Image (cartoon, rainbow, N blue to C red; front, top):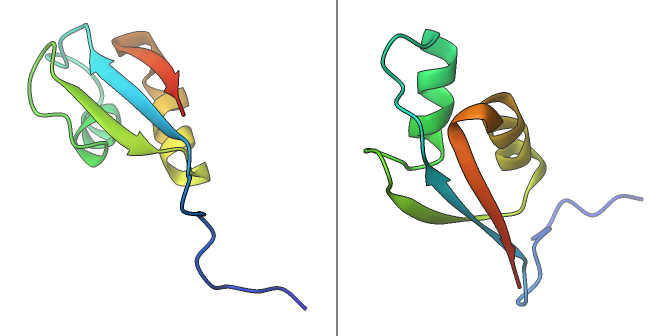
Length: 71
């Protein structure tokens, strides 16, 4: 049986994401991914949990981002 409880443990890995290229002229879906990650402006850095959803958004707009793994 699968447990749908808290999937992230106390020591959950996070990913530090920085927007290094502008979203001007990009696809609307790509702009939405950047906003979904919590990034509002160029060169802003945020830390997000390393979940499948966040990884999908990061992979989609990887050409706009700099990504660093943190523990």
